[in-house]
Length: 120
Image (cartoon, rainbow, N blue to C red; front, side, top):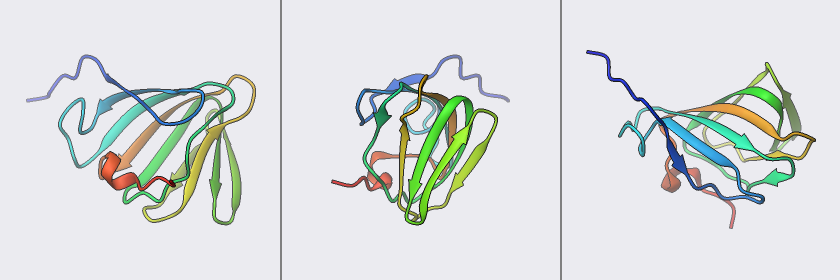
């Protein structure tokens, strides 16, 4: 039988200024460890520490531009575009451009604070 998940859980996120994470599927909202699906709203000027996660992350930008720094350079991912960051790669997300970014992140396996390995 299908399981209805009527509303997301709001999760506090590191970074300045704060972004909003609405987890629809994952450890917090649905108890799923295999996958997480979250909608992110990051304001203009937001950035977070770099990370080297144990999960693959697929990100679809809905509005604005999400910047993805990586060991080989920088990608600016615009609305309607997607990016796939593989487990074990160093990455750093930000939304430095006007209007910030609205995006959906899908992590396999699910995101967890213990598996993201943020820079100190």
